[in-house]
Length: 126
Image (cartoon, rainbow, N blue to C red):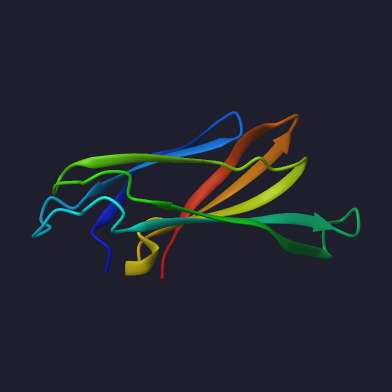
């Protein structure tokens, strides 16, 4: 079970996804730089008919980000990834501390002219 929790909302700065997470204040020890990995899976969404009933998704990219520095219990880290997604609609899955069953956050994103816009997001409940 992961001891990291997402802070606030993930954001897009141009084509860069930015997020922050905090190590549970009740954790017994610090987390060392590189000891955890956040993953980002990008799925391009498309439809074959105007009604949108025949939708499909295709994996457009996968990225990982290691914990950038040591984190003491109660402290936070910030991370980011340049997604550089071409025009379209995407389902982006951000998993915090993925190796330890961390939290998963699903982002619905629109890409146009190199800019990403967050349309909605939610945390997945396992």
